[in-house]
Amino acid sequence: MSKIFIIDDEPQIIHSIEQNLNHSIYKIFSFSNAKKALSNLPKLKPEIILLDLNMPEMDGYDFLKNLKELRIDTPVVIISGENKIDSAVKAMKLGAVDFITKPFDFVKLTETINQYMKIKKHQISKFPDDRIIGTSKNIQKVLNHIQKVSNSYDTTILINGETGTGKELVARKIHQLSDRKEHPFIEINCSAIQETLMESELFGHEKGAFTGATDTKKGLLEVANNGTFFLDEIGDMSIGLQAKLLKVLEQKKIRRTGGLKEIDIDVRFLCATSRNLHQLMEENKFRKDLFYRINVGVVNLPPLRERKDDILLIAEHFVKTFNVKFRKRIEGFNEDSIQKIISYSWPGNVRELKNIIERAVLFEDSDTINDVLFDHNPNIEPNEQKLSPGQMTLDQLEKEFIIKTLKETHGHQVKASEKLNISRSKLKHRIKKYNIDVDSIKNG
Image 1 (tube, rainbow, N blue to C red):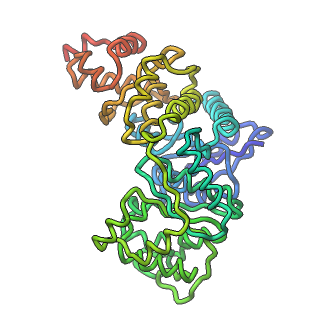
Image 2 (cartoon, rainbow, N blue to C red; image 1 turned 180 degrees about the horizontal axis):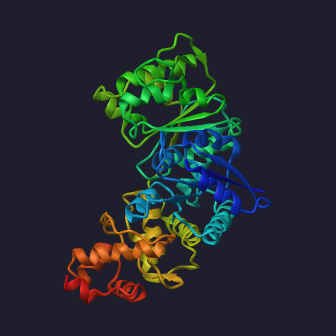
Image 3 (cartoon, helix red, strand yellow; image 1 turned 90 degrees about the vertical axis):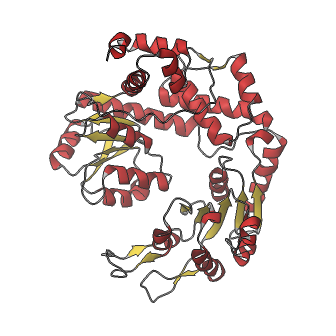
């Protein structure tokens, strides 16, 4: 039986959804509080989440941010009374897969749930996220090294590599191959969290430890007990916190902020950096004693430009992944696109390749990718136009972007196609497809 979370602070909405869903197919868990739902996620493991945006204490946006930080990939469908396109775009940028406005059609809601249930199952069975793809000599050497370091129960590992090379993927692979695989994998990005909040996130706090500490909170180090703790971009950690982390690594004990008791933890540490730690040590920005403590098992990830034999293989994998996401049946690339992909230097590595293939699949209308564009994709912000009640589709979102760009270029289609990073012919096709009146845009 498939499990569904409904998170909404309006009891009548929850009741309506519960009444209209088939209880012989779905097991429904309802929450009026997003924080409570978040705490129940690891235990209940729903296949899909229906989420309201405007809620007290923790709103839908913060809930999505938490999912992203915890690397939870459960599909989230937004159910909201907000019917503005900017709300939908913001939610989707944070990882939501769809947006349905209230009052909604329950037939459409059920269809949407079924659709993402199928996609989720398909992704799990065919495109597991933990695959490190490649047959090149360089990546095979990395995979061999991963296998070796995974056999150790508590050796600290340092993963070096440029941005976008897949350091987090390697960390997860090490965890999955280790004896700790049944226990938590907790990740924190040292560059993404403010220094003032980092200590509380790592060590937790006791009730009353500071203004606003209304409850005792476990830190992530405590949550990770018996599992693996991944410190991404450790080179960005402050010197003060580096000293505290060193103590944890050596003693395997923590103390919550405001607490008196030391708590034993059994955690394996994986660290990653895209920075030169030797240079940071020379600049007194990274502690030498911490470096020697984490630089035990080392995995060096090659940049994509040094894995030429793997590039097309990875690109084809992403085509399959985004075929599922965008419900397309693209088979591969034409010869011109293949040459572009192979000859490009990929300064952003695998992450850049993934983003470019996603865009190519999204905008391709044939069964073969004919257009691969590497130039910068401008961040086009959507306008405040409201959607009519009902399901927000990818087509609606794309149409709004095109209209806004045409307005910005005063109806000049060549300039608009450049801003959108699509060919002139593709823009013409979409103008026709969405019945966009370019003349009226030119005339204001």
